[in-house]
Image 1 (cartoon, rainbow over the protein chains, first blue to last red):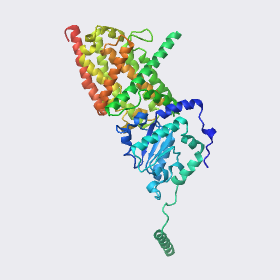
Image 2: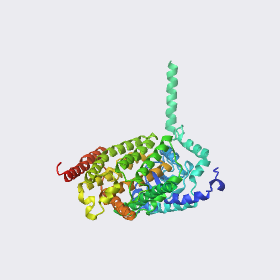
Image 3: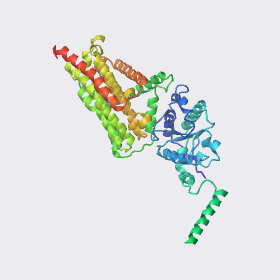
Image 4: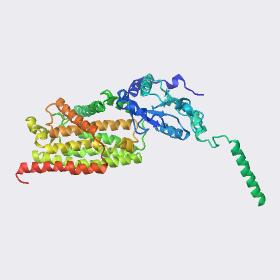
Length: 205
Length: 301
């Protein structure tokens, strides 16, 4: 389904030099969808001090390198996440934060959330846990830095190569028109009742 | 001819490099205020190289022109600032020319950024230009003080007049003017009491809101050149300039650290509060200094 061949994503020599600088200066845009907004401030401020690695928060998608999606992703949120992701200039990376972007977490049966974020935008790194502690966050970011330095974090190239596939998956969720909840017995009965009423009214006419 | 071109280019790169180094050390210094360790001192160089290595989105050709014009205006101003006694080409260091060239930085930024059409950027630029209106008043009054005291607008002559020793520095002879100058410097650098134009949590970093990749890199370089010129002006006007390049840069560094220390402990003014403070408090202090200087010079007011 996904086409990623080695030749298509391999970097040139010059890119490898630039990848060192990219890995040492990561600016992130954090999309706090509900959870995770509590774990980030201690990671950034004096207790754990993320800025030691050159990682800092940025205000807008245009300036950011990493999109940090924290917590569950509801369908409405997904629309905004895709929009923010497409506004970011390349190279860009996505970090899924917590269990919910991986497999839905405790919301996996919910009608309003999506289960796998990776089906809609390419996730480079997932931080497991509900929620991950700041130590885990920093450990994950150090891993991401290693991946970028080696040229292994290629999510944005995957997105470009498989654009139709991602767009189709997004459209499945975002352009859904039929009701999400299956009509139960009560609603079916109600519908029949209204139909009957309409027919009666038409009969009177 | 070729030599002077090399000299000018070399000076421009030197100014940017020093400004970026100051920014890097400054980030570490502010981090110590928060009881953090902060990034390595060369972090700003890495940031700039990374910014230039990214793809960037231009909204209009005016955006390209404006970003370049902002940097060019400030670099041109840096050419007239004597570093110690060194100047890239023969001039007297005319302070009026520097005062004319410095706003080009902001105006270029305003042009480039408002071409992007983002409303937050327009708000940020409006605030930046209002703030410029604010700090020009005390700063121009300080320049008038200098003219009243030394009868000269040349920065080289002003530096030489203070070479007799520590007691001949203008910080001793014009204390009110120095305080006004530090307040104006804080506004020029857009540090904390006067950072209404940036305000990341309020208007999403203001003028920088649509800048991506190379444009952000240019904005970084512009800020680094701005740091060099503005601290350099304070050093030349009040702290005796410097006989050597090393001493001059050391003094600049101390002034910048003072500015960051003020930045670390203050909260943010609203833009009209900031302008009022700059006009009345800082402007008033500078005006008192001007009156004193006129009196000392002529015996009567």
